[in-house]
Image (tube, rainbow, N blue to C red):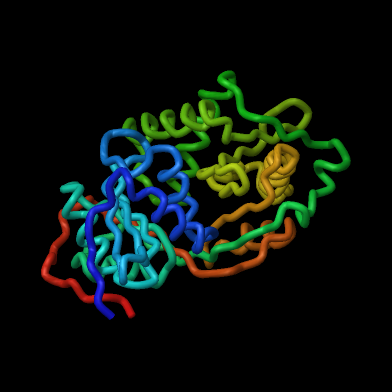
Length: 301
């Protein structure tokens, strides 16, 4: 079937919104970026260069090359072509790939990074939960623990926790740059009211921040319990407390992804009621680089 690929620009938002809504659970980052920043490529946190593939005038694939360098994909078809166009439009180095696993692998191959040194490659499961089915742990229902929104008074502690999370979960390198970007992460979560702290006897013991929030669905991310406090149910409780609060505000669904080998997290999320619906991937290059091969324009069937 014939198709054409082009940069997506202001005015294309309705088509992108309709397409992403048809793949809603696997498009939370893209849907959030569209909602917050539209189809604008700039220096805003959620901005980047967007490209789409069309068949008979209908949008069938999307990629965004974000200003952080990651390529976000929702491209059941023509994944290679849309990531080529998004990187061409952005002119930025590629830092990694995030999205449905099969699509990220096609995108990596298309841009010539199959042999590139990687900081991280994680096979993740994608999980969903209707919040009316949330199983709230006894730690919360008994009142022994309390989940609350994070506040500016938590900033210094949460910056350290966020940096530790990124070292463990994303293989980030420790140092001043990580602390600075972790501070930016936490300050953003405070501004967006997306961070939650679990307290035991008034002391913070765990943290989570939604990494995408829409009016009806949130994506759980950044769940962290310091190693000395693990295996006590704190991570499960902070997620449940945050979800219970957003459910009361009208959110009815949650999505998350977690590593295939992270058995404690998988058990915790299953206990909350999450069920697996797909495969996800996080692939980060050791050093961001320009695409190595722009000649491939094959389509994913």
